[in-house]
Length: 338
Length: 293
Image (tube, rainbow over all chains, first blue to last red; front, side, top):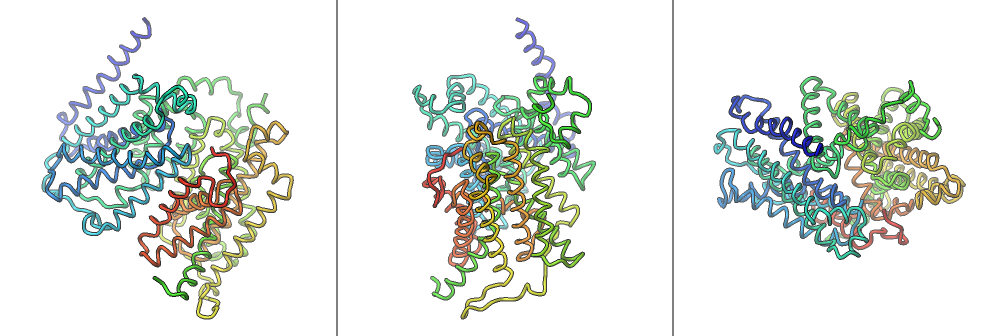
């Protein structure tokens, strides 16, 4: 009973007002001048990318490092179909094609990779995939514009509002999909595969099917993000959209927030993106250094992610003075301290 | 295709170049053995060593190859302190946090270097940079040959350390099964610190090798981490000589690919070869079947 009340309170005082604010915000300010709007747009994309990765790595236990492959592919599908005249500006068809194309590639790649490779090898394989795609699109001739990339007709641009809402919509879609999936029998299967693959297989779970399903869904969302990103930039080029940041940052955000949880990727992406932006504004020279230090510190002291902050808080209590000093400089482990 | 003479030239260039990947790969492989993570900051440490070597050369005019004498212990020390100070504590929480710490370390180092040395590429020009040996009509650059010899020596030393010394045997045992090793009295913490320190020291050697032969910039290292990774996949994880051979094979594949298909495709070719290898022979081209993580 108390749990239900607490849950209602979280929704009533936390999530719902934030949601109302996010929906109405573009009409409260002039979106063309508001810095926050474009910041939120990018954050939404990162949350979706992170959630897509979380579905594969957090729930199914297959850490992929190829999110940028699907992101870039989505961006290029949107650009190429628009230039060919098959789709238009902010066209749902183009976005569906981009997401679908990315999912299709994930299925094609997933069948051999996921059937054969486990753990680190799967991560390495997907990393290779992204790099191969980058080279293919760089060498693609007139269809892909080579290293210069493709220009999209920027005269189509009217306002930042539709981007903002579309990104928010994609974010909600990824969140709801993940929530529904992990609470269904599918989610049980995912987690069973993550925890003990052989036992899951022995219990009749079609392991490969579920792995590919999760991988394809995560890639679908990455493709959607790529599509929206292409519409936003109007100029895409291989080293931009196949940038490894789009593979590594979602990983970072998910683990920082709390891997294998519904809200972890969201929290991680918001916190990290805010940190990057703030550091970029106040300390433009050294902001990546601060980010690096921040990542190391969080992982040293909150290895389970920010979502589990409360559970890990006990770690800081009852520590003797000079604990950090001893730990870092005199190399004492917990065992030796006792 | 190419004529016989050019083929030999391309092959030799590939072998000499690949030996650089090879040393980085041995370090990465050792670190994988102790922590079970892909240490992506390896390349950043390499470039750090390249910059320090650059400093020693330009400020005190110490010969780049002689700068290995101060740099090796320095990087060994770096590795030791890093493992004891950070990784040992993080590793208990699992693999993901260690991986992220490595990632944070990479960002930290890259940007620190770009603040200190600016993002512009640097290169070391010694009196012998332009020297070359001629074997008939095949040209061999002297610095690349030195890099090749250095990497052979480094591989040999690590191999002897692992096969002949008690410490080395402990390292080998721990990389195969940490729990069983701990049961027979091997201290995981000590073994891991040593392994990690040697891995970073090898990054230091690879950095000096880069500095003497190619221009470099602060963000150059990540590509090297990736290439070292591919080299390990070729050679098989936990196989010292295999990692060197894997690096050399990668160098040869890249230089032949770049020559016969076009420079831009070299990366895709090496990644494609990598995908094929990990799909069909995940234990590496020369590995005995090795227990996989």
